[in-house]
Image: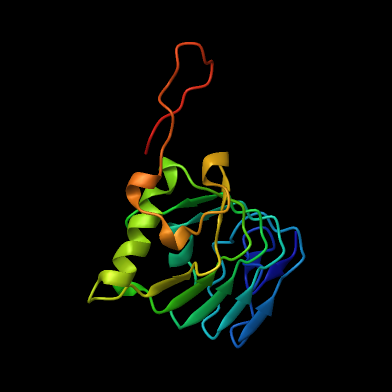
Length: 173
C-alpha cells in the first residue's frame, strides 16, 4: 500500500491533487454510481453520460463541490430517482443535472422527485438544484411508457398494493 501526502491509496480520493480541474469527462466508463469524492473545488462540468448509473439520489448532489456545476447523466440506466432525503440546500451552489435518455420507472416511488420538479417551477425561492427533464420520458410501467415526466403530477404515479397471491411485497414511499 502506497501513500499520497500521508494517506494510503485505499483511503485517498480518486481525485486527490486535482483541485484545479474544471472539466472531468468520464463518459463511457461503465460507472455504476456517483462517487462521494467529486469534491473538486473548481469543477464546472462533470460528464458521466453513457455509463451504467441506475440510481440518482438527492443526497448524491450534496457531495459535489460548492461551485456552479453541470452534471451530465444522460444516456445512463437511471430507473429510480430518490428525492426523499432532506438535505440543507442553503449550503449548495447551483447544480444543473441533465437526465435525458434514461429509462425512468414512473411509479409511486418517483413521487418526491415529481413534487421537487413542481416546486422548482412554482417556487419563488429557487432550489440550487436544477434538473433538466425537458426530454425525459417514462420507460415503465407499460401504462406510463413514453409519457413526458414534465407532464406528470403526483396522482399519475401509482404502485400496486400487496396482493395475497403475490410473493413480492410492494410498498409505497
